[in-house]
Length: 117
Image (cartoon, rainbow, N blue to C red):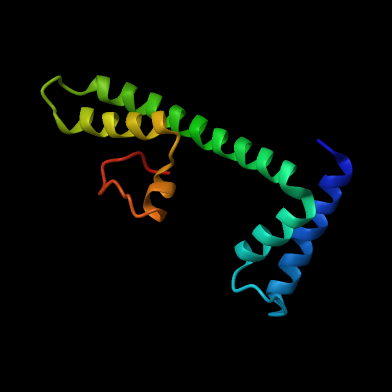
């Protein structure tokens, strides 16, 4: 972690939050302000690396949930068809590296039955 970049990023976040609270921001939401200003402040290289880390974290969380779901479904009788379908849906989503939120925001929602975040 680059200490100077970290200090800069924290300052940008605090400034974004302060401006949003006082309605002195040119951005409609705090998320929009953070997205643009922080990206500009840290540069594309750091921004891209942070996004990769964030996506991997989401995948790891989903894998953990999938493992718990598989353990849960193992407890059900073999004839219960709804449980394996939910597990299969979650497995496909994780193998594509897509979170449920990504699918919903891109218009490709699962229609239910996926892993809850």
